[in-house]
Length: 317
Length: 171
Image (tube, rainbow over all chains, first blue to last red; front, side, top):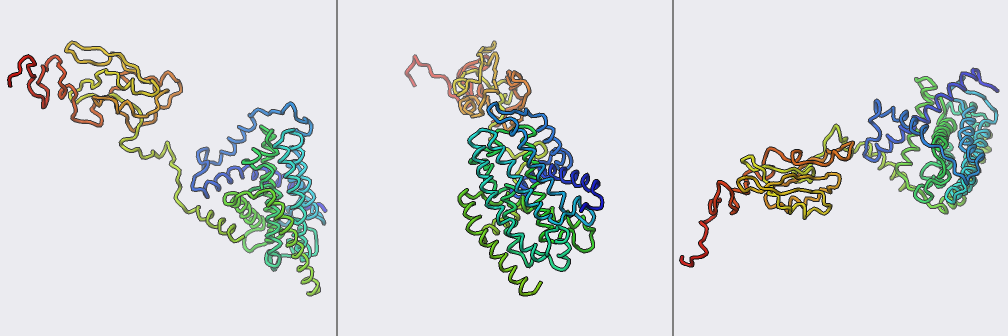
């Protein structure tokens, strides 16, 4: 089902998400600095806000080099995949009543599918670079996505059970009386961790791990192709923050303020939390990451689903 | 798990800590009086050059950035004909200052010597000389040393006894 103003919504969401993704470069650097007792970029423009512009000018004028040993077509295509898949996910997100591109009745599944497709970008980038470190990064990304995608979906099934729908708008409306973070707290924690792993942000940035793999899958990338990976990463952060807001924190629901403001406030809170995690937490070893995923998170997600199902059955919903 | 949450909380609290950054061009850092920065050549209280062109600084310099040529004026005072410091080589170790027997060469708390052209970092004597005694206000080498120059014969320096007649052993 198409939303009421599809074209306006598409343009609006594109402009807001892309400029927010660019602005996150500044926000992340400022917040990291704040938490490390520094100032961060504060020279260019008011509060250093024009740093974003300066960075963009810089990255556009950098040499865009393709290694002669790379698989050229795949190498060029890979950075686009991540941005496209993440932007596709935004199509089904209900930002506020009426601000939605396509109100799919399987919206949640669509988002999960798109975020799974996003990993192709990383794997293909690592593969086509024909570089040991890039390949290792791609391998890690594939393994990490595979293991974290499983319980990412499972952790959300509790929410789906409670709301009785895969439709994101219906899920938001089902939280009118109580945010799902209260009955589904475990699910929220699991989804948060899976989300961090999904966006390959610290502390789960194993695929790029500067200290081990130089830059991992994008070691051979330069210029705006490298920039695309970053835009994709920041878009992923925004997407996961939006999803957490929609699924567990009542989306646009809130008193007094208009719905869109509530949505943006909640999303910004989670974006800041993502950056705080980057500032505070160290990166686990790869085997720790894998065993954590399979031995702790997956059973917990299954138990959560089981208990939620049993309770829902007992209450006769 | 608990330790992770505690870590997050403590890092969050750093928001309210004092910044460690010194916003340099707006906010100057504190430099100690003995900070080793730009090298100068000082003058004695009478306004004459202190440097006696003994070459000790050039010898002490580990990177050979000091070049000078000694000469004498009409009264017999030694002074450098030219005195050149190549600050693109200088490592501000301060050995020249320690080697100097006349307190002439001194390091100052100033490091803002950035240049766009490398030759501009070569300082000549007129760039190095300052109109003052620097860290040692009252000191005048020629007034305390026993060296004979025009206007000051042997034994006329401060705290200097009369010259001994070496050919006479009588007290």
